[in-house]
Length: 117
Image (cartoon, rainbow, N blue to C red):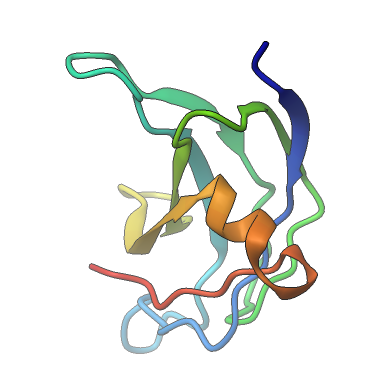
């Protein structure tokens, strides 16, 4: 019998690079969490999006995400961080890939990663 558990994911970021552009103030970041497909050819599942935190490069998002974690399988999720731009397309600030087992095995169940472009 495989053991599964409901896992809650919460997010925060520190010292994000301001991508708002010259004379446009500070970025308004939000995050999109996507469950990476575990089967070859499978489709990723978007778990959801956080709230936008205005003018903040070290946001602590309130929204949490829940996922069923099967201890016998590798379960990965991607966190994409974007700057909300009102009259244009939102700008990517970077993303990071996590494996739930690594996060659960880390001290305090906290895992930090540098964003990749």
